[in-house]
Image (tube, rainbow, N blue to C red; front, side, top):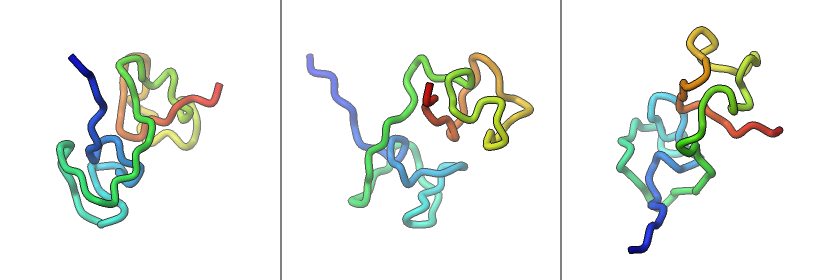
Length: 80
């Protein structure tokens, strides 16, 4: 069996908060994809607030709920 990564809005760099496409300015579903898809590295099963580059920073979009084990769509890989 071959395992592949599919292109969806969920792994597109145009996806912003609230499942909105910044390129087309519309709300999308996690199963949508378009011809403008631009792949970006996204979170994995090990991703959470503690390995997000915004954790405990002013750039964190959810500072009240950010904690170990939590994950949001604003997650960015840690630079360290």
